[in-house]
Image 1 (cartoon, one colour):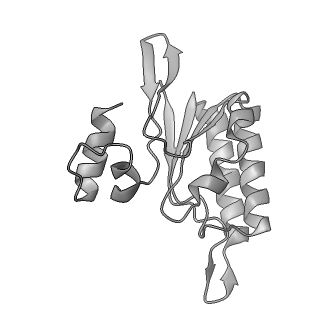
Image 2: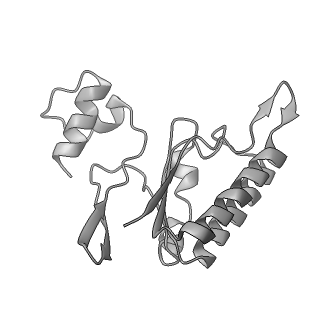
Image 3: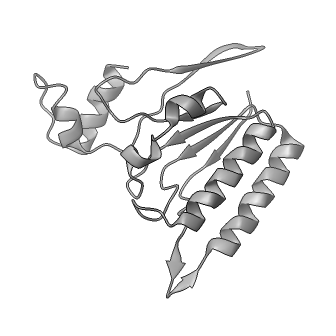
Length: 160
């Protein structure tokens, strides 16, 4: 199964008060063109989709256009929230988008279920683990000692 992996898009970023949006739009169009040529079954976007937790409207529109382009190519999309994203905001509408093939890491509730993809080689389980702080994991696993980021992720993976 062919995947494209993207991360750290930081849509809406400005550098010294100069908006990067035009450059970001150009790059996303290039990615869509490459997807058209390479025909991946899925795209994994792992974190920092936006540059800040409350993304500018223009960045939201750009990402919406990009997702629409991927779905039009019949590509499954998997999105994981990063530390710059608001997991709550990013997950808005995720149940509706899920039906279109756009899968967003849900707000962490102690359970991470896989999305199952099939190809000629069999099943592939995709687990969307969002950016998590140890305190977010501790509240679901009170009987476990979680004192570091490593402990938190280890517990999450052990329970998947």
